[in-house]
Figure 1: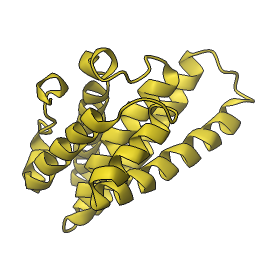
Figure 2: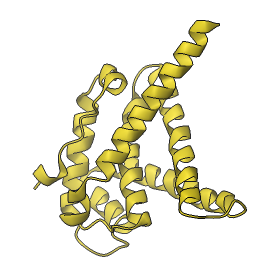
Figure 3: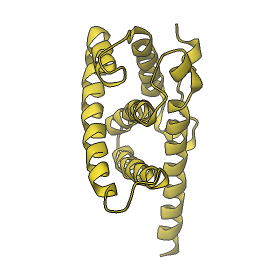
Figure 4: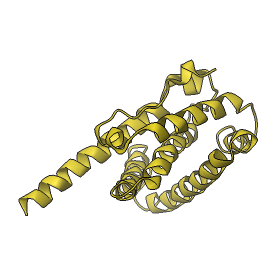
Length: 175
């Protein structure tokens, strides 16, 4: 029984670290200053969704227990979003409605980014332009960053996801 509790506590720490690394990568100032990702709740949500999708895509492609870890990470992401809404002052009766919208957006973006990343090139640029830049602007540099991040995560063994740090490239270093 004690080992079950210690495994569960270790898993919570692992998920918290993964989520923290995803959020840190999504909040890199270069994404907002150099890449033009909107510095708003929506822009930060899009950046977090993009980075989370890259991590989840890789975890789901690995052997067990990686897919279980991916599901735990998704649960933690939604708990984080719920807490963020409440910190922003969204009232209790409204939180479930907003969470439904965010969940649909997160899952929809995840599918779009995953499909576009597999297709590469123009498909990825278009998905980024549509979702992050609201249909306006040049997404070519961000697409190169996403491709570099996806490649770095694809090369990482499961142990990297467990022990960290996640190998996100420095966005300022991607031309």
